[in-house]
Length: 235
Ligand code: SAM
Image (cartoon, rainbow, N blue to C red; front, side, top):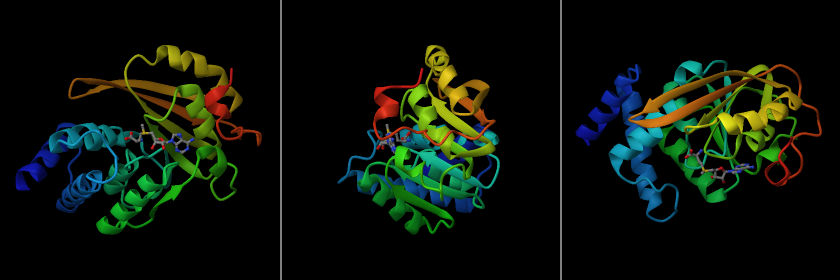
């Protein structure tokens, strides 16, 4: 247990993040709960403790310097990545985690309760539906997403939730250029603008963070109804 906690502390330090004792304990409890639940529910293919720390925790918090504002939505959060690790280190932030699969949402809410995190909730449903709910539409400073869809589909899910002046943070693997090029028009249609593309590595894994700023309100017709953003991406 102490060695694992030390590993969390060291790996975070390597990326310039000094975790407090409380935060280290929260990451450790999160990992225990994930491993426990993963015996019954398929939440992650990654089960080695060090791999969870690198590929889920560090991969989530490495983009922390781009987090600003008070409200964040994580779309397709799955077992809570990157939303829960970012909440652990930004404890004043109001966070909503959204996923279409109910058992993942139940796991996230159980984790939130066990870790006693405040001002964070996991909700069940699809981005295409919640984006038309006035309580969520254009209400977030940051909308974040990892491993959910191709860029064109993803921006149709994400941009309707971002308030004007806010940002979308898309966590991607390597070689995003082609994907990004085909999403350019969709980004414009939805009121966004590519702000920057950052390439970095997490323990030899090539990663890309695409940041899109929201310049104008998104037209009410977007996102289109369930399934359309994926089957007929905007061109
Ligand atoms: N973000 C997590 C991570 O990086 O570990 C989970 C990634 S998992 C590959 C993709 C998740 O996105 C799934 O849990 C799926 O249910 C969710 N998802 C896909 N499309 C969605 C949509 N339109 N609305 C809400 N959730 C969606």
